[in-house]
Picture 1 (spheres, one colour):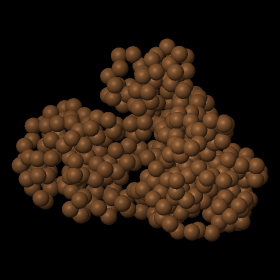
Picture 2 (cartoon, rainbow, N blue to C red; picture 1 turned 180 degrees about the horizontal axis):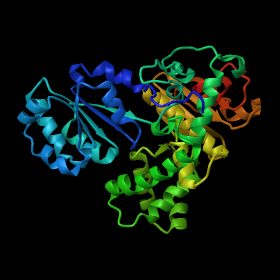
Picture 3 (cartoon, one colour; picture 1 turned 180 degrees about the vertical axis):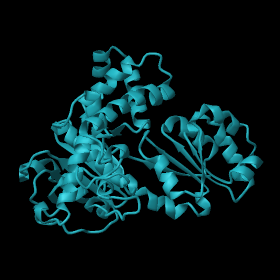
Length: 420
């Protein structure tokens, strides 16, 4: 844990900074899981905006009574936190936006459903939406809000750069920092509150346990108005146990005593509250027999382990989810125009992750092993025969320190070197 301290730089700040003064940046919407750092970001980056907490029920009603002219005169630049608690405010913000060209607002919310449905209805064409995720490896390696964040090899590839990989992770001058950040992420996840060096490991585990309980009691009750949380708790536990596996809604419904439709609804709640990532199955090749079942990954390893009441000792599937989550978060942080899939044929060929860009695909095989051979890349061989665009490159990500060029389009790289 040495070197990981409170106050991490956030990659998304550069994107927000680039747009906040433009005409298209008059209304910014920042969504993400609870405790992901949205409020801290706004208070640091947009400190000339008046911060208003809509979560406080005592003053919430007063804000909803303001007219558009009052918003213009009293709060011409403001950040509204937990705005989904009073969706009617979005209509007020829309009216102020339409009448007064000098107003600027930031809307913050922790659950996509309540916030974004109203945003799509009322603010279409008027706002720019940003998703915020837990800390990534490059962010974990910073020590203050103002630090410059080093882009990972993965992010450079997404930016169409061609980085040279070290022949061994041991040669990477930043190996120690990358490895420490990766080990930390696998144990505790990426929520900013946990990086405080004064916290003990036990306090971190307790925070994660409390987070899971708060998520159930607040976010899920807000989203679904459940009277009984027990079926959802059981399903959340099942998804944690089966992370990185394809979804079989029928089997889950039988095991849990709920309908397959309810399983789908509960999974949607996990997705829209930023707790899970559902990868659709890539199925664009009509000549190949491909499975259509999606694959579900829990997004944060700290939360996953809190749900399962375990500490450390990841399984291969949990390791796969950690890697897929990190690849996804890093792409989102730089606003890459990328779509994420998994690929599985009915005869057993499987690609853990397929990332589609405009000009082609990146493919990933993910192994927890410390020694990689060509056999581990067998599902990546001749992959282009399946695809409708060129294969830009394929990678085997693992714990093997040695970088191996398996073919001209397949490279085996240590996960922390690639993502750190």
